[in-house]
Amino acid sequence: MTKNKWWQDAVVYQIYPRSFADSNGDGVGDLNGITAHLDYLKELGVDVLWLSPIYASPNDDNGYDISDYCAIQPEFGTMADFDRLLAEAHRRGMKLLMDLVVNHTSDEHAWFQQSRSSKENPYRDFYIWKDAKPDGSAPNNWGSVFSGPAWEWDEATGQYYLHLFSKKQPDLNWANPKVRAAIYRMMRWWCDKGIDGFRMDTASFYAKSNYNDGPVYPGGLYGDFSGSCLNQPMIHTYLREMNEQVFSHYDVMSVGETGGVDIPNALRYANLDGSELSMVFQFSHVDAGPRVIGKWTDQKLPMPALRKILNEWQLGLAGKAWNSLYLDNHDQPRCVSRFGNDAPMWRALSAKMLATCLHMMQGTPYVYQGEELGMTNAYFEHIEDYRDIESLNAWKECIESGAVTAEAMLRYLKEISRDNARTPIQWDETAHAGFTTGTPWIAVNKNYLSINAKAEEADPDSVLNYYRRLIALRKSYPILVSGTFVPLLEDDAAVYAWKRCYKEETLVVACNFTAETVPCALFAPAGGEELIGNYHEHVQGMLQPYEARAVLYRK
Ligand code: GLC
Ligand code: CA
Image (tube, rainbow, N blue to C red; front, side):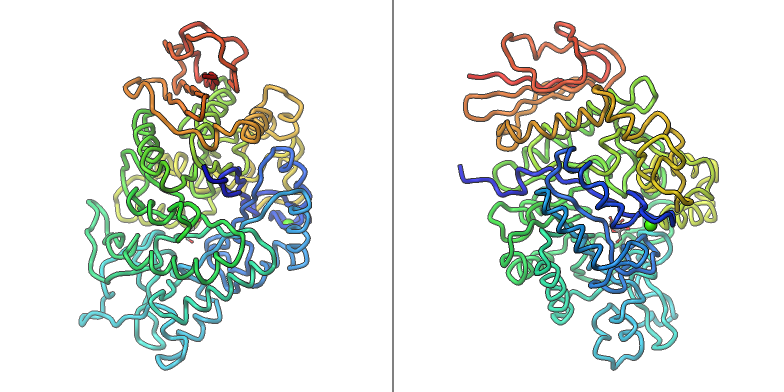
């Protein structure tokens, strides 16, 4: 077997800088706040840090609307602060990924300012401009991800521009070779600075194949653009070109955020031949399940449905491409609230169970800040507590259109809103959880007195200390990285189980997703080595509530 790539052996930790640590009391997390906590991250054992965007931005979508790719957002610090963070991370043996947001820019980016100034401007074709239909309406029926139409009329030049996200996030025109060349130049500039790769925002959206109307969702107001804009054939041509022009010249990793991706497409994006990307984030497990309107719901995804999806991805990519493993990120509710049980009695146990489940699969695991503490959904009670553009726009659109009541929508936000993941990191029991000495830009979760890093450091049984042990295992047990994946007990209603096989070893993993004690005969053979588990005592032939166990058997 050939040597692994460094990113196959790695655990990645995602930082959402606004909410990580505030060093200067303005209520907003910043680069110096991150640098001050590098020892915490080193002790956690993660190998790679991914920073959500830190570039200059008007902040319509918390930095995912970039006005200058080579400048640091002033509220996050300076380029000197960034250089110090990078050097300090490297000094501790950790790598650093930048978030690459190039499906769109901010409307305040110089390219768009030029582009919108006249039809003759050399930057006009950097974006996607179309004439109105004869009746003056938008070129097609597409809705934006953040509610409302995906087209914005621009009075100055009398055309519409496309924005699949907010109207302050105009889509770049990837069909224009000059756009691609400018992006590759910018990427090389960052690689030359010494960064270790990119998390690629909405990487499945770059290529647009046509501008036809999409099917309107039942009860929805707009058409679905996916058929024309997601995972279109040209995307692979673009990524191969990017690979040739950028990645192949550096020792960097790339992880594409590929909404709507299926296994055949992932086999191309993340192929082990290295022709496109290192790996992709697939969405099947976070998009699945009953939805009331758009993405909104208060229904949970039952474990058997989650298992079916994750098993398909494990088997589908095996030996051909590489999986990334995640339950949490800045766009998803907290996994312990969503897939586990955040009631005080079960929170820590179920958070450890989910961690075991994820990290024992094959692929590169991602830990999203606070996940290692078992942080829960914020469950904000009032719409005024929310900050996220997606949540606020959906609140307005869904209620105004009469599709749902305000009461129901608030319930959906509590379960699904991205702000659940964006509350400040709970460092200790002091005011605002030690995140800031000022007023935080978004409220701290009320449970910070009992859930915080300081308390968890001191408790050997905490979620934090469990994560430390779990992450450390990868360094000494090659089976975790290289072992094949074989599903077990595929019809069990409560237990998600599988084995990994490598050389003479077999690792058996079982996770009880329920609050009941349930039968499980998998660990009957004696003589295995308990790699990790969230209970000190076992019950023969049973798994206790939310129990997770991983036992290694040799030959
Ligand atoms: C990605 C980001 C999300 C952002 C969107 C638009 O999905 O993860 O936070 O809002 O792209 O850039
Ligand atoms: Ca600050």
